[in-house]
Image 1: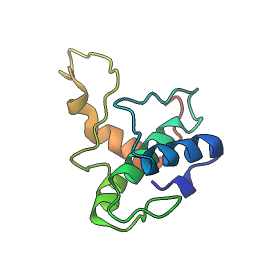
Image 2: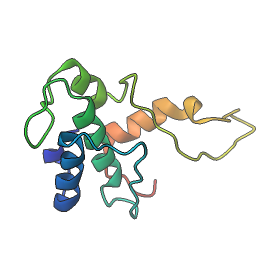
Image 3: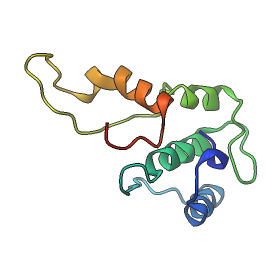
Amino acid sequence: MKFANVIAHQAEKKHLIHTVTENRISHAQMFLGPPGSGTVPLAIAYAQYILCQNKQENDSCGACASCTKIQKHNHPDLHFSFPIHLSKEKHIYKSDNVLADWREILDENPYFGDR
């Protein structure tokens, strides 16, 4: 996802781009907001910008191999970690077991709220 596709968060986008151009990327970032507020798309756009092989001044290129992998949610340096409900019936005990579902949800609507 490109920053241009993230609704609102103009000040945050500017700050995140600045951290990359100044080589001041923190070792950890927390994107927090209510469901549907765009924090997930913002975090993905930031990761894409960091990993983009042909960064533009204010956004990732959206076309290089790295951007393409991010857009498919399968870049080897992009990791998703989230809480899950443990289910004995389905034997779901870790995030990796529901990653395909997570990617499908992101493809449907990255601004997802309660499902």
